[in-house]
Each structure stands twice: as structure tokens, then as C-alpha cells.
Amino acid sequence: MNVTVNYLSPVLGAEMIGADLSHAMDGADFARIRDAWLDSNGVMVFRDQNLTPDQHVAFSRRFGKLEKHVLATYLLPGYPEIYRVSNKVKDGVPQGREKAGTYWHSDLSYMNPPALASLLYGIEIPPIGGDTLFCSLYAAYDALSPGMKNLLDGLTAIHDFAYASRGVFKSEKASKEQLDATPAVEHPVVKTHPETGRKILFVNPGFTSHIIGLPPEEGRALLDFLFKHMTRTEFLYRHQWAERDLVMWDNRCTMHYAIADYEDDRYMHRTTVMCG
Image (cartoon, rainbow, N blue to C red; front, side, top):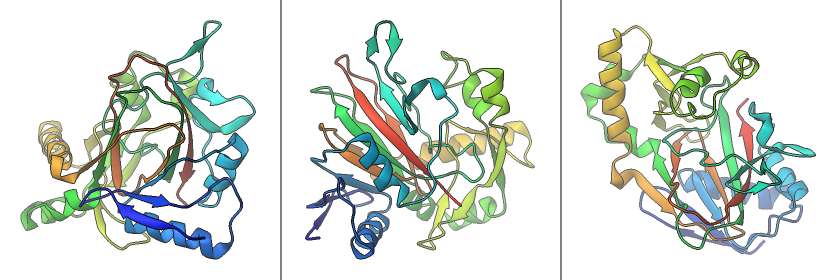
């Protein structure tokens, strides 16, 4: 496989030119893709891909076990591993989740183990708008003062789907069955990436409800500080979508935010690889 990797920002993001993800690849080619993805600090763009749902699932599965999202309404019929993101409606039925991810978050951080990677494929893309922001949790941690790093060391936080349901999901209330299937989980505020060995901040505004062991006011103030710090512009890459882009991000070391500033049709397929 003859490929070229171009970096897209100083802090995270790269594109791989020459890779065709629709075909099965040998172990050496797959290892090259995985290594380049890790070297990108967590966001790799593959342009001009022609992927069927089967091919999307097959490539994603090379990275690990795939998640079947709790919001089953938006799964692609016949493909429970594919979560549809779309503003389209056909015969009164939504063709995907509208305005999915319009807040800072790491996918499925409310699960244990959480998500390893997400692979989002652009099938119909508005001519303008609908960009996705990505934040480097490596860079956010590295830029903290030594005193703040010491304060955070050993702290844990609660990540909770029900918290999101009361907040960022409040316009689309989750059912009791969905909430029961996703109980709150506890994660370290500072994690070490299992493959790169680098430290990251593992909290996010979408799903992190509070810090264990701190009074609510202090915990809220600390989280608000971290969220503001993490989303500084120098830690970000902004992806402008084109049709047939496949973007793969590492949920262990990034957050992302989908900008809902478009009116034209948008239709995308996402798979999510779980840790563990």
C-alpha cells in the first residue's frame, strides 16, 4: 500500500492519501494505518472512500469489538453496528439522529469500558456548514500547571448517560429501559493512554456530571475550569467535511463537537469501537 500522510494542524489531525478502505488489507498495511492514526494524536481523515455498510463495518472491526448504540431507533436496519446521523426524514420517519453530538464530548464515556474509536462516514454532506471540532486531550493535559496536575492526580469523576439525558439530550428524553441499560460509571480524571503512554484529561461537558470526593460547588468549579481550558483554540482541529470522507478519531485522547449550522440534507454512518 503506497500512502502519504499529511498533518492537518500542529496539535492533532492528519490525512492519509492513497488508502482504499473498501478492500481487505494484510496485517502490515493495517498496522501502518493504526500507527499513523496514533501518531496523528487521534484524528485521521481518509478522503474519497467508497464504502458499503459491510465494508465500513469490516474495516472498523479490525480495531476491536463494535458497539450497538443504546438509542436503537437510529441504527441502520440490518446493521446494528452502524449509527445513523442525519436531519433527513422519509415518510415521517427520521433517517438518523438530527444534531447528534452538538456539544463537547467523548463518545460513550458513560460506559465502562468506554469507546476506543469512532469512524464517521459522510454520505450526504451540506455544501457549507456542519464542520466538526476536535480537541486534543493530550495537549490540554500537557498545558496544565504542575500544581493543577498534582491536584487532579488520583481524582475520579462520574460519567452518566442519565446526566446527558437531563441536559444535552433533554429535547429527546431517553426511555427508562435505555437509562437502566447505561448506569453511571466512574473514570479517573487523568488517564494514561494504553498505547502511547501519554497522559490525558478524561472529562467532558456532555457526560461528566461530578467529581467524586469534592463538595458539589468545588467539583463544579473545577470541571468548569477544565472544560474551558480543554477547548482553547490552540488545542483544536476543525474538520470541513466532503462527501465520502471517513474520519476516525480516538475517544481516549480527543473530544469533539458537531457544529449544527446547516439546513441542507446531511446523512452519515458511524461505527464505534469499544475498549477492552
